[in-house]
Image (cartoon, rainbow, N blue to C red; front, side):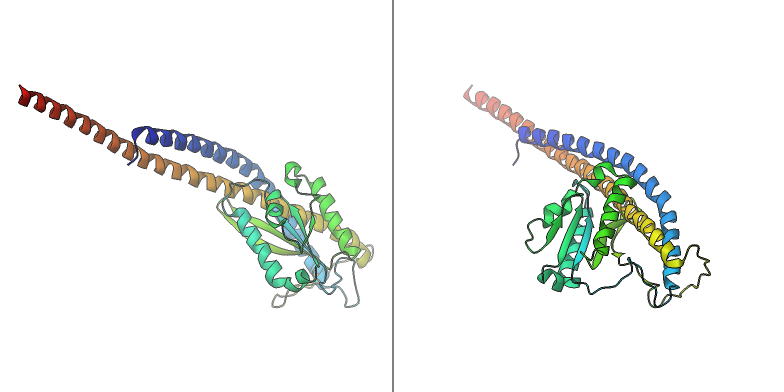
Length: 296
């Protein structure tokens, strides 16, 4: 049975923890508001660019080929894993890591076996988990990209990815990130970054857009596609940033509520132990008084 001193120490400890989690929740909520505004402003622009690109690519003549839509046998694969730099955000990082592990063990198992898998980690948590894997090549130049998340810094990374693809260093580049839905919900995505799809997927209606190109179509696309890919990569980063702060806010809110429940239980325990101690003292006093009367 716990003594009163132990219960008081635990109460003070839980109360301190609750104050910390409440403060972290408020900080995450403040960051979430800014991150949410950024992604909600970016998303319509990004989706419209994607629609335009899809329409144009689906109308390319059979012989047309661009640097960014060349489909090669996927011998060398680059996975871009976008996680957070810090923890305490619920299952955010663990779900992204599970998604990546599924790609490594199922989709690209043969490439991993032949040493054809590379992993570019944005955010420290993904690298910390996978860094002990000996059969994966790691690119760690952009681990701290979230410390200064701007379009200019994002563009440097995405342009590097495009250059690597054109130079045939990689045959496929996949993005693994969390798409922001709301503060409590994220969708964990695997999105093909390169090569660019040459049209709509099977089952979807192909839209024949009557575009007039000036200059010629291929030359225009060579300029347009990199701009769209830069935007898509930045959108993935903004999605993950908003998702991380939403997940952290929900996790800290849950932790604060759990601390409140634990404090309630500890107060009940404290009062019970205190009442038991008082009752014991009263019984000892009454017993001692009765013994004195018997002696008298």
